[in-house]
Image 1 (tube, helix red, strand yellow):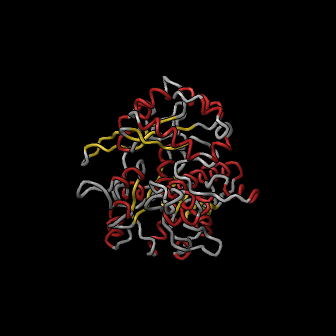
Image 2 (cartoon, rainbow, N blue to C red):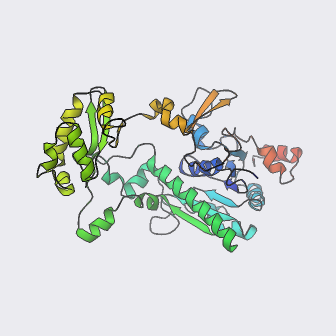
Image 3 (cartoon, rainbow, N blue to C red):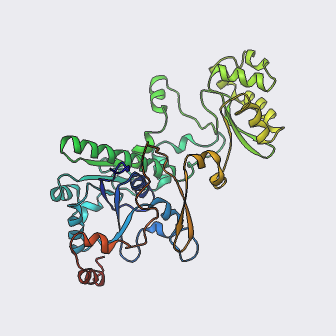
Length: 397
């Protein structure tokens, strides 16, 4: 019996760029057989990006690891029929086109499920399939703005700031992966395959903390507070001699320990700082005091005093992702994978953060070359080499 959790699941992946491919890569990490459908000749736009000259984008490598690639032109009748033949053999069809595209091609969820009633159909789009903004174009920054997150991010005296690393796309991808797994579970339990309509605006709005609940209950608006926390202090990023550290004390007990550790026990009894509300109200004065203490030391010196081996307070050095390739904790957790590549020499991937007992790694390590698995996948439908050559000549695959 395999130790891959989803090795009995086959997914037809029509997604491209970031959000959708990230979701299906997470499912491939868990063992799903993900068949990535790409445009003939050019493939996914994400294949073109940062990489050594002439190579497939390293971003594509990371977000499409573990998949099989086929090419197919959905604008052609023969291409649509081939897709529906593939639908008969899969558990899930997932796409992240603009809302309405699949239906316009005669490949709506009703058509797919008429061909395979047990096939879950999952869609991610900027604003979903319903509502006045359905079908509107979106990118990561649009979702962050429309979903309310961007207005909360940044410093009070500056403009709204987009969360780094295409945050909205990755949040949408995580919700998409969760929705697919939930729909598969429900299908296996009830025999009924559902249709998932996920809006990236919805996904971002869902992670805006409790801002709406708080506003509706007490009238308080969310504010940009930089790296601080609206209800706790000190909870911020402080500059040391050689970098930046974060210090977070979200309880009275932790605050008292911090005060004693840095030789300022008087702060714990100061009327301005004795309570959560007081510290939040006077966070600028408090952070200035903590900042003065941090500024005189190196990051390592700060962490030695208040971090592990010292006061054991929640704190960390601010690290760039590039610096984390040698991080002992991430290495111990298997979060950095190094795989030999036929032309790049080696590719470094993020590992899978889902650590299950006795689970095996994904079946395929690398992202596929464009159309690498045409013969394999279409051969499973019974197509011969001569038929594939003719379809390729016609531009169908």
